[in-house]
Length: 165
Image 1: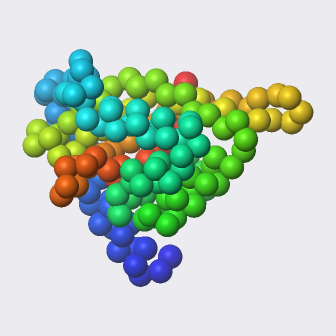
Image 2: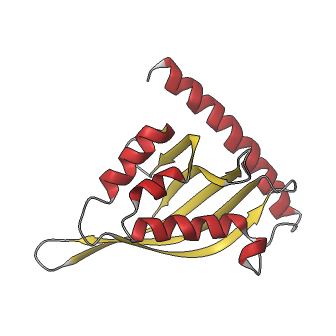
Image 3: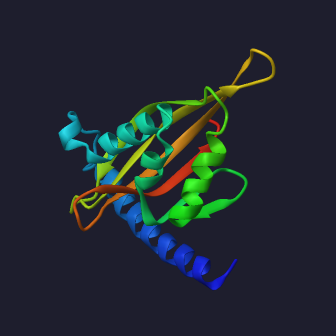
């Protein structure tokens, strides 16, 4: 890994560690709950818009929802850092005709200052299989969002946590 990617990874891990510690404290204190309305749930709304872009094949818009210091990682394989690699990961994962993602959020929330949000839930990635079959991969998904200087929500981390039990 080159020095720039290492610096990005270390900075990103610091952000996610701080965010997860903050979220963990909020969860323990029962101060973090799923929002009732999309206006009160900006991370959930940003996730819905990102998935809509993916599912309509608008991969440029989907890639643009990620922050400049974003990371995308699955349970195995490479970790993609920054805009160019994230765009490459989206292109790679969605290259199959008929690719579609279904997502069921379980919980979402915001940090106390309203600058960082998360959404966690279950996804089903549908892609064509051999012949006329479909291949469905079920996974748990964690998305961490951060509000940028312009007030736009950008995905900081897209983490596939593996198969649900």
